[in-house]
Length: 334
Image: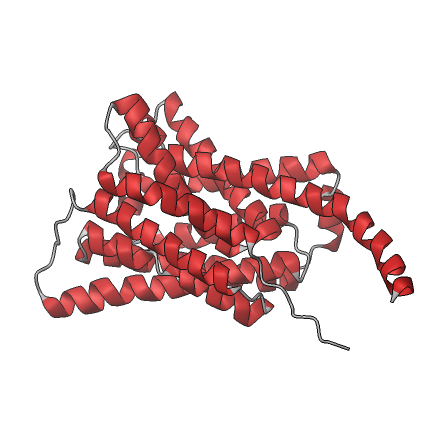
């Protein structure tokens, strides 16, 4: 037994610096993404005029995202290697399916949002956290401890409270037909949540199992998503508006600020998913709602709602529990 202990001890010590370095990256990227998510609504509200065509801002964001990702790959010296090793089949298997799933998910969310009140939509949309954990287990066999499952429930509760605080002032359903609410409201948002969990798990699988670079995945998914969006403009209202008024209708120099910020957030999502997984991204999204509430109080003088004040400790507790009690494989007694 003493020999075994002496052999395993150096190995554990040699792994600690790498683990600590990766953990530091995870926290750094998570913090940046939380701030980006939290500040994005306020910055977009201030710098994007109502006349700006949504498709033009989305496509520009994807272009900026590709440029930033290529620059970062060139800076770390991996661009030439990626270019030599890149294959169409590898790209489609790693990024094509998640990109197509996200495109379908966004379409379903648009349908649902028009047929549900804000409160119901926000609450149902939080179920994607469960589906992310489920598909992560199915595809990667990434199990959750009992404490982590409890932490996820606390996070869902916090998200629901934040949704109640946000949606109670906006609750107005555009449809009073129960069948329309069910089939064009509830069903689409639930299917979108399932797709969101699947796409997030697939991205994590591509980065952690296939060792697909998060920067390369960002480039591939941006290009595929842009092609899907461009193909839809032939018959969409945005496409008609672009043909009639021009691509940059309503833009100012300040419009680039939220567009670039959103692009940076897209790259950070890829890094967080690669290093920490899709479940961590769910914690970030909920934490960002609290950041938004804080920024609204600082810049707009709008005090946080009682729901927000209750949700804050729940988020902090859930994050602490999830980090402190990871799933551990029970060692068999010899």
